[in-house]
Length: 385
Image (cartoon, rainbow, N blue to C red; front, side):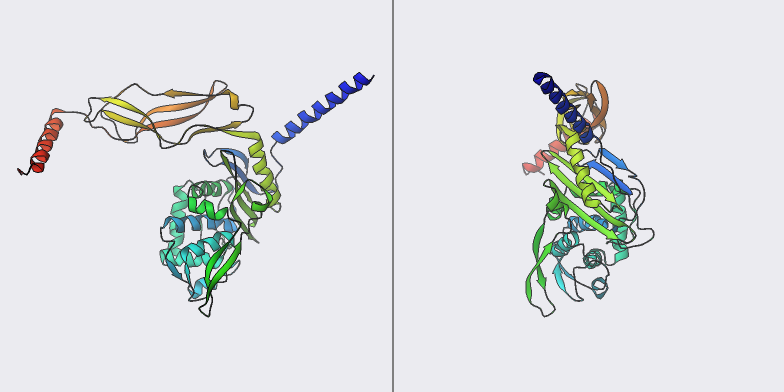
């Protein structure tokens, strides 16, 4: 009887463990109007809820404002705050007209304290006006794949056609996080900035990040909060565990902290990143027949990585399709091979290998011209010409 009870208990424990495993594998229930979970390295979408629905993004807009400012290379410039910038409503850094402050400090206040006044001051300093800066924003958004996004301002305050999507915000964030300065700022819980008060006295001012997820989730390392009456509570978050970084976006979500945390945990518990080769590296060098030069570098054109379910990770294999040699002409950026990822012998992803340099076809006239130029160069070096 005792042995039977032991077996029944063991079976019960096994059943509960299996049930828990299934529960962990299921994506969390979400209350967001739009949401996405994206792998930062590959851009693979691991969860989607209306990810292409156009919604008001609120202050998550400032992710793009910040990366444009950082990439300007002007962070050490002093900004003089206009009356227009200082009067901007909503969340504020409490800037005042005529204040002098480094652009770097404004970007920090923009991302940590969500200062709308800082957003306008940045826009005016970098582009001369808010309208000119917004043009830069929209061009930048399109260039990183955020094709369903249109911004009317640099801060995210309500405007009827100021719209983005969960997918677009994840794409903008994926791009921004490749910048070490941006990544460092958004992962900062608390810091001090240099502040000049109205009396001209300089002191340090403490800023505490509005992103509570940095305290709630051990792996969290970004990114930006946002809230307006129209947009509702929004959050773009990121977290890194081992070699994998995930980006979660929830829009108009009154459970944004819990939902984001559960979404990131689901990603880490369910998926693994299989890394084969880094984007941009020279994968191989191939000989070229009939070329003016004899070698072409094969460059990895996009991330040579794949996100798969934890269960499928052992079944990932990689095949490389690359010729032994090429024939001129070869054009820079030309596809010359590919890396193929398989899961259980089924091809699931290809990564192009492209020519890193051009090689012209060798002709008699080109060879004679090269010989003549080499001769002239040698004569010049010898002082004869």
